Image (cartoon, rainbow, N blue to C red; front, side, top):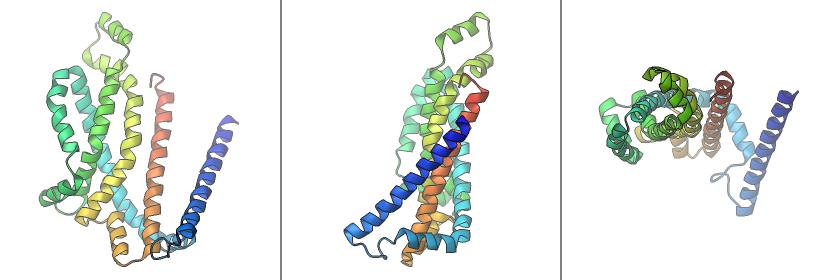
Length: 254
């Protein structure tokens, strides 16, 4: 009963937010007197979405493929680097400034350089997503490993536990909430990173599709593509939340 009630409340809140967003959309159009070639109505966007949903889903699949591949690789790399930095703080002091510098490099300048080496396609988008999402994941993972309970660490030391046992039995469970906190931020950012890569390199995806529709001034389809991107980002965010709850049930310390 509690689960059903929570689901019902969540659906009700989502419907209320959607209705509020549509009302605000109509209000902006009427208040500012915007023409359809600037901002179409939600009804027109919904009709375009219904007519072009197969095309939009095809392009979205390409974008999500590069985005999810990039976030998976960056998460694994960030997890490994954070584990090394937690065991040896000197490594963090040495390499962290370089990682921050790479993260702060403009994506607009970085993506064409990557394209020169890897060409137009999936690889360039994956690398751009990795650059966008790596540092947030690294910082959260490192903070999680450093948040391990000191008493637990001392107890493992008393039992003469090996370094790998300390990591998997103590540091890893305590780090999981921080890892998922990073994922909740990095996963939607991965979609944005994939879109930026497609805009800059012309690789196949919903980002390049939006640019094509903008050049043809097909505003209904353009906004339908934007709505699809927003919906995909929200869906990935909530899937991350559900995955976190699932892991918390399996690993109580998380």
